[in-house]
Length: 140
Image (tube, rainbow, N blue to C red; front, side, top):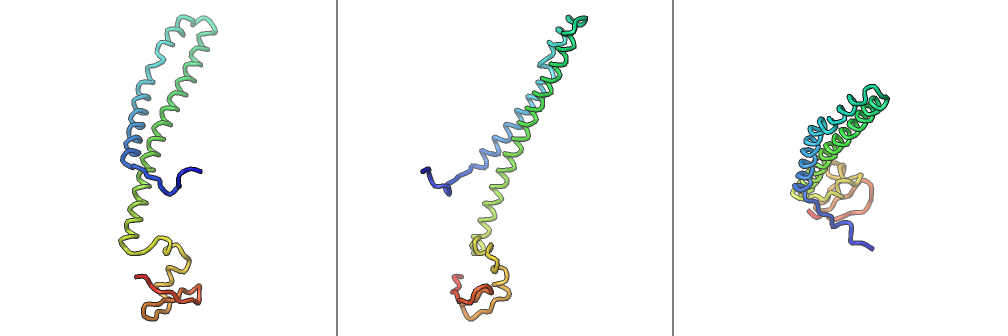
């Protein structure tokens, strides 16, 4: 059995930096791709009267389109990494706000938690959630 799943640590600055690097590499690659197959024009002109000339250009176009698409996908992946880092940071900030508010996130997710504060009968430090008849002692 592997290590516990709950001990996952994400360095969002490094994830975001990797996303930046991938986007920059994608832009640079796309820029360079515009000239990478220039020598195929020479082959085309040399074989202009042969059927192979048009086959070379067809292959060149397909290959260039494929490489450009891969470079674009690399940029999209970089953006997704940045979005993921933002999501982790937002989740951390939400957890901090829950802790500062003195509430537990699990409490906020129970079906009766929203009505407990506004409509549950209170008796000193005891409250009765609407979904149960049992009393429980407030920990606040």
